[in-house]
Length: 74
Image (cartoon, rainbow, N blue to C red; front, side, top):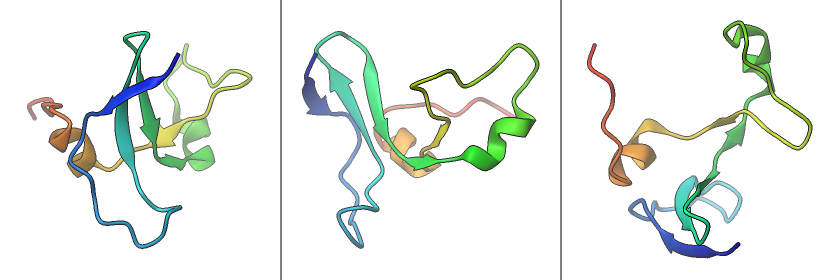
């Protein structure tokens, strides 16, 4: 599996470690660079969980919109 292209509009990064992004993968999946949000684990809905090798990641709304995401109404 490889990154095939960037899906969002590149953001100006303060440092190389603060650059949220959305990427298309050769498998058809999508990869994100975002902030790991351990503080949200306790508020996950029933039946949801973060498994071994997974992370709950926050990606800024404007990054997702620049990648073509349409926010839900209301």
